Image (cartoon, rainbow, N blue to C red; front, side):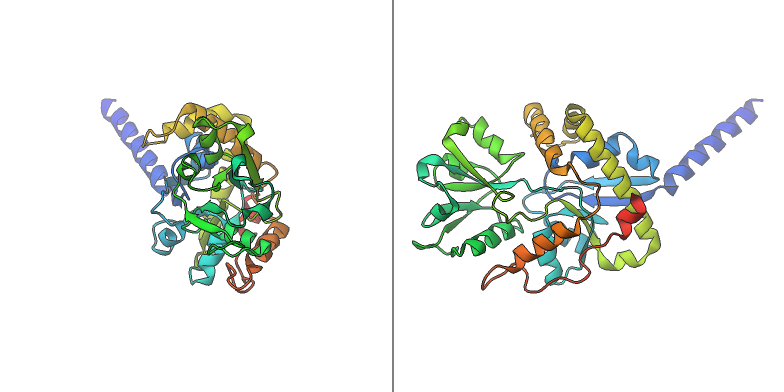
Length: 328
């Protein structure tokens, strides 16, 4: 009898191992460090939504020295989170990225300015120093300045661009009149540093009509020729959107899950809970499927960059509904 029981346990263990081995592996490369910006993915993993879809998902945090397009081009990820301006610029430069889903419906990007700088409207940017993120994050800003017909190489009729680190120091130290911020992150860092909201003026890209799509999911074009890969991505998107829905319904729990996955220990509960709530405003209204009108608006914004546009021609094959049609 004892041998039979041992045999049964061994069989059960073997079946468990087979089930684990049968899970399809997916590596997701994030655009930035572990934070509420990516809550939906961490929630999907924590709550078992990926496992329910037969997936074993590895989430790789990003950082200032990590460019998601380079990671996926080098085989380090199956799917990446990136902003569309960066993805389309990378595509034009030879990395054939394709948008397979768009969890973020709205843009959270803005310029945050000190009122004491005298800036009241975008026209007042002339002659001022503005903090700008680079590493692919500069494209929306450059497109906006092109719309305003403001050179970005200084001068009385242009703006001086300060290559901003991923912090708010240039504003705090008054090295720049305005800096790049996100509604869910750096803006609140400025507030937490002791500057009153009454002393600030913000210009949201959404309000200026130059918003471009952020935080979409991208894969390499050739991989979409493989039906098994498309099926795997469909299951990944389905589970991820379930994670985003859960985050909207349970923001504090979602923030706690993010904190549990923050190996650096750099994030705080207050900031992450606030971030998840702000991020939820940006994912609201998205089913995960790319809105073609939003895509075309982004492309037009990037093309209208004067003598130095972000992209020089309309992309072909830069998005697909094949994955979301199957997922949703």
